[in-house]
Length: 284
Image (cartoon, rainbow, N blue to C red; front, side, top):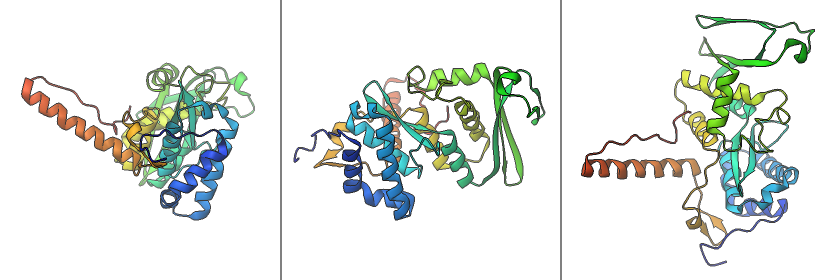
């Protein structure tokens, strides 16, 4: 295909694996730093699409973008690992960061002994001056412990314990406000898809990230997750003879935001109006 705007057509899991291997193997190897891991990533991509064939009905470019965002973060698309997912939404694929993927990134950033727990209505729980006391009767089932009412996470970072607690209402509001897939059948926000409530734990962990020293990779991962893999509006210009000129997708998005800032600032100077800008790296 010589037309640089020619759409990519992916009709099967094999098509996607072959396309990525042919056009992006060097980048994938660079992201994972290991050929064996890179091959495992491609196999996991194919397995993910086989398990969720609705992705084949999505815009092919969005599917490729979502999986390459995942590769850039060095995460595996696997329901087993729970690191990251690609989900269909209104004809396009979306990257979604999993709880375990966020844990992986926090460990890479230097956190230790990370744990997250669900609080149920019959548990003994208190949170005072940053200190959590949570008592669970391990001989009781979740049903016996009662309905989930909140979640918390605790981590050690450079010898200091950091904790974050959220109640159910605030957690669900975060999901409704920031996940486009919140009401879909595929969303992990539904308890039938997430009986262990990992999305609750992940939400609290994301908020705890605000308490840690800035880490570019974590902030980029959370920004991409908050955006639900927003598809680049200039996507049609990224295709060139079967090759997506993706490079550093998150960096490209940040560059676009920087350009938008400059245009807004210029306009503000011209018309005297004030604008509020939210960068892509802002944690929601």
